[in-house]
Amino acid sequence: MPGDDYERDGLTVAEAVQAEQGDSVDPEEEVDVDIGVVDGDEEPDGLDEVMAKIGAGDGVDPIQALIDAPRVVDTGKVRIRRLDTSFVVQAIDDDRKYDKLVEQCTRLVRNRRGGGRSREVDGRRLAKLTVVEYTVVPGFKPGRDGFEQLVERYKTNEPENLVSEALYIGEIDALADKILELSGFEDDLENAGN
Image (tube, rainbow, N blue to C red):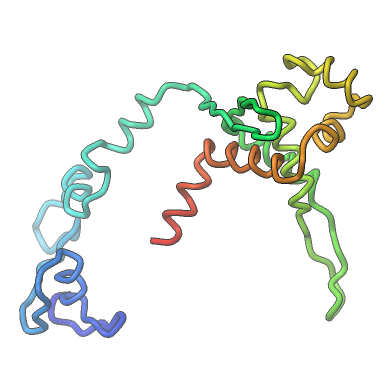
């Protein structure tokens, strides 16, 4: 409520709103911060009005953006300098499939202090399995282009071992990072920092 002294980082709500809007901060001046709040007989604001007041959506209705979004899996290229070529990777298109990969890489470990057990994810193995599943060219799993040639060259038909034999650790990480970036994980990290 305007004028109430709810402190946050040493500022009242009114001061914080003014600072956010780039105005000079005057603690005596009241600021109206009515966003979708109904007082008495007033009509509630519609979604569009609320979104506009809080500056959300950047002019695009999020519901309509999801409805209009084509169901296309994003792809990208990762340059492998050592090999003087680029690999094609795709975004994670099925969270259930990715959850299964995470589950494959999770194990129960005994806690050193206090006993009990906790779950631990083997990040190295998860990166390899992510590369196997979401690298399109060359293919590290059966049915993908180049898989048979890679099996012949590296003498293993186990996809996880094939990735380990063919690529350096940093290359595996670069591919896995690009896959996660295409899947929106980088956006999550940037937003978490704000």
